Length: 168
Image (cartoon, rainbow, N blue to C red; front, side):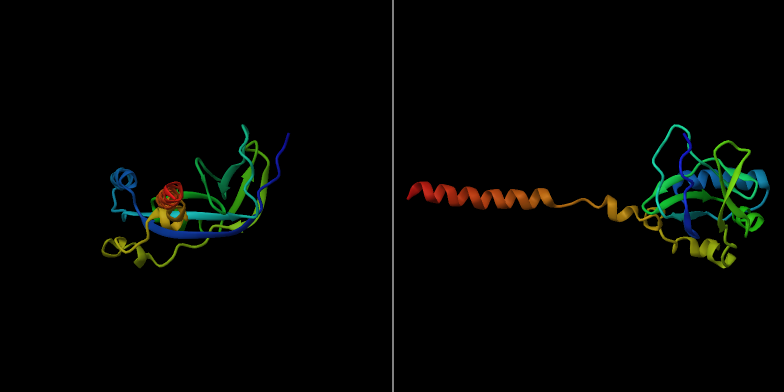
């Protein structure tokens, strides 16, 4: 049974601080490419009208003819990560497409934006970049709630009233 093609509302490239895992991958990429690669993770956020339900057979995501091997969900859509800005330069303005079988493609009508000013990735500025969790809106979801403390004090108040009522 074919699922409905996800409708893309917008695409955004957001530079963010690299995680420890990202930094080790960047070091390997840098050695393989024999050139320095800034320690920046580019989060490509694809906002969707509706996030399709998880199925055993999902949609493969392509930028031009390049298949994006992994993408993840965030509140509002899906995203993937790029660790080398050269990928963004090489694929700028290429169509985002979905495919169920790797042969038939559905054009989303969206394109990968051109990379931002390369000055944003200079080593001196990487510490000013937002955390990936902030870019993806996970920090608000991860904040602990204080319901437990509120309940405890409310119970204590009720317990005191009950014990006072019993004394009378």
